[in-house]
Amino acid sequence: MSDVKTRIQTMIDQHDVVLFMKGTREMPQCGFSSRVAGVLNYMGVNYQDVNVLSDADIRQGVKDFSDWPTIPQLYVKGEFVGGCDIITEMTLSGELDQLFDQKGVGFDKAAADKIREANA
Image (cartoon, rainbow, N blue to C red; front, side, top):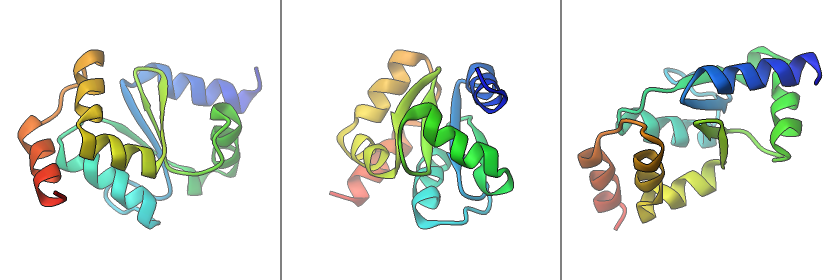
């Protein structure tokens, strides 16, 4: 395994939830990253943000690692979940809640419900 793949795998192994994104949770640098970070922040999910803009090797490496061409990318308990569109759909359908429940990831259920109510 290459050094970059090893670094990515280590990040995924060390944290229950990892978001590879452009920017940081406090200052996203693209709308798609902002949307996913906003959902996770609002739902109170404890996650590790990885700014791909600060490391070109990680930026390309995570795309190769997941075989997914875009950023952001969300991993939950070592499993690649998807990018912005998938996370948005899962949030609105309640599937993200179910995934977090199944994987034992803490989140604010009332906040998740509020997201759905606001988008109904």
